[in-house]
Figure 1 (cartoon, rainbow, N blue to C red):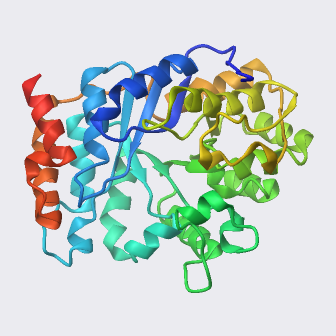
Figure 2 (spheres, one colour):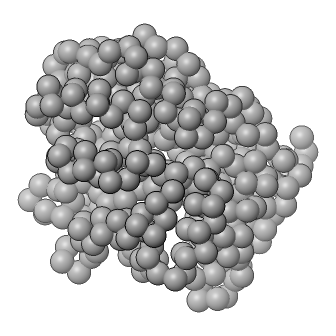
Length: 368
């Protein structure tokens, strides 16, 4: 295995998925083996399973100096047709901040999300939410769109096809999603947003630059989306110039997740380190997880960025947008939130509340 480790210390990974608390040992091992000091756990809620947020709260409670938590919004009231009650989105923001979450994770903007929650982010449903997060300066990690080839059946990768990430004419289109983002940012120009996966603009750096220039409070993260590395390898000089010009607008991310084997985690982080720090041509290592494709899919060309740029990307930009240290968790309030999520999951799934992920985390936190 051709391993690659960063030469920069104090790395903050702004885009990690925890999974359930049973992934604790795996997540700790991956953190150790990748040399990442702190991780932001982006926590998409699954109301029916009571999962997503509780596992992240568990890790924050256990390892408060290492883990930030970005809480996903809970749309169970809309999804259930009013069968269950939830706080409004603005009230959820207040609660997340009160228990010690560091920001909000939004999956609302991924085309699959529009398939199960057909509510545009410009809808009045979100109005109070946008006003609240702008007023408070809440950091947001927002997934908008998907790779361009997901709308082209001839170019759709097999790993994406297996997950139902191929779209057709009846699905929301890329430009519609971008137009909605522009409308939200026009209404709320002070939003503190990091767009995940380079906002899927890696194939058009001119457009990415115009987006940054038009919206000075936003950033992109580098969680692959392997197409991002292939796209930006096509003209490495232009890509390097872009990263130097916008060095204060780019946040390191890996999209690591707790169910990875340790060698898969090392490979995932390593391809991003190598791309940022070396000037080498290389392929995805065979040890990488299947979401990165196979080594035969293409060549990546490193950008050999200067150390001052790397320090912005690996640490400084996240710290300025969020904080140098994770917020402290109010464990008692976190238990109450998990208990409520467990009750919602029981109503939606008939699984006893105590057996849901939220119920198990509530018990574990209460015991501590």
